[in-house]
Length: 321
Image 1 (cartoon, helix red, strand yellow):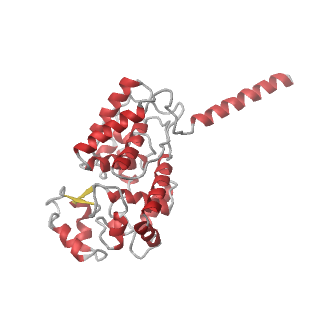
Image 2 (cartoon, rainbow, N blue to C red):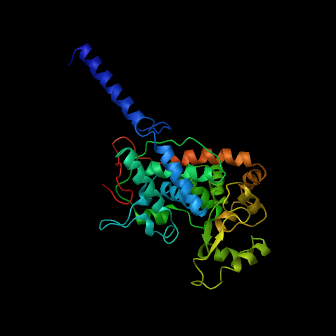
Image 3 (spheres, rainbow, N blue to C red):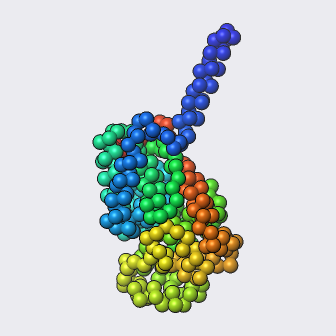
């Protein structure tokens, strides 16, 4: 048995190691303050340029972050291309022919690697990009917690099963968000991200033709560019927010109150259920929505990040090192 002094030294070392591992497991807004101080400027410049070319791109970049975090956590796995060893998330039903913005992330990663090689993860670039997309389209700004590392593999089946489809009912939405540690208020606030962006006809056809919880005039308007017959015009687009599809505000919730939600899953948030009052609150108070959206985005960004020695820092976001 060791001496008291040697035992004390062992305990001290153990405490230091445990504290170190705890620190490594935590994300922080100043994670790259010394190792890559240029990161915020590089990302903001690139996102600004991308949105200037196409305002819709902001919504696409925000959606990438959502879909990444909902599949095995915020680990940049959605950015991986298929390999001979696995089929990735890009080919999953929620992403195929709709997930976009990968080239923007590639360009940002290239610039970041020039400035501080091997330091910044693709997962963190995606997190900052989503914040800048929201802010540049008129939405709130927040300090993004950083320090994530990148996954080496991904899963087609996990993406097919992990991302709520537009046919989801309210109970299914609440259940999925709850399984990730997100509350019903988080669900509604994050759904407010649909105040920007567009959806494909195939994702809202059933809602505008077959369902009653929709304003008839709105349904007719959407039917003009989305034929009833499946396979015809499937990729035709319509704005998720009829009022201001390229500006981040609370019009999405005003639409829901008027039964003008484009997706079935959108209108489920205002359909006589348990979250109607939250929708009404956000429709009347932009500040309340913005504050809760920021809190929910930070919370979502905390879903199962890889930290410390887990994963890697990819040199190319499309493939593992």
